[in-house]
Length: 267
Image 1 (cartoon, one colour):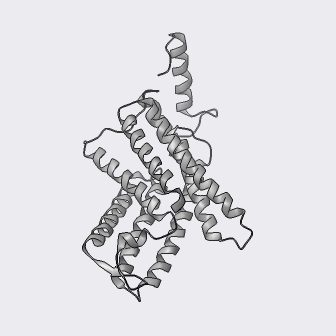
Image 2 (cartoon, one colour):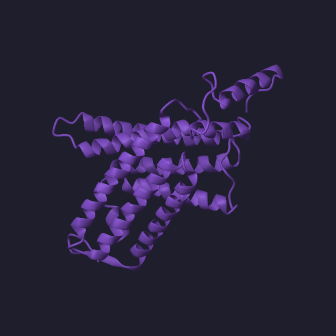
Image 3 (cartoon, rainbow, N blue to C red):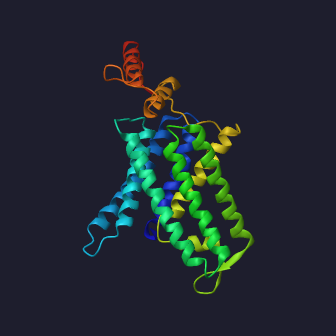
């Protein structure tokens, strides 16, 4: 994890740049976002392969974590590019639940390990992991019950704010007996928990500012907005294909035909 930090910083910068470009309705903004998701997927995929190639005893939980992260990253890439295929939502749900289960296991183990040493630090670590778990669950249920997903996501964000506040106001003693803040303590974990929580924090800021009307939504100028709304309906399972085609596919065919007949190039 630590050896990839410089690359993660670069990807975070590109993620923010792509988001602002997409808000300005520049088509390359979504391409940057999709490229960032693909890059994360490749990194996770390489780590997964390295775990599989290990000759000694394999850690099944590490394999599940990396497999889930790889799947989620590539499926998010497909969502960015509005690519949908059968069972993709099912794969997304399975990967999200598996990853939430892995961090549930880590939360229990780490809390039990810390609780006899320092109850405050143990409780802070518990809140940190609970925020990750709730965030993952909100992603899983978003396509099916968006209202409930928003509530779960808001609760996850509140827990994250509680964790950050606790990190600022008080320090606890770690295993070595030295005082340490909760934030500094979780940064020592050699997993992807801080990466996940960082992505969640950025996503929450975007959603919050967007709902407050302070920043625009992420769009693409390549197709009319109605096209993307139809894609979202197909991806969420709210629409069934007719004669093997979804309405967004029919829309795209007619739109492309319109551009061709009028000799208009895609943006």
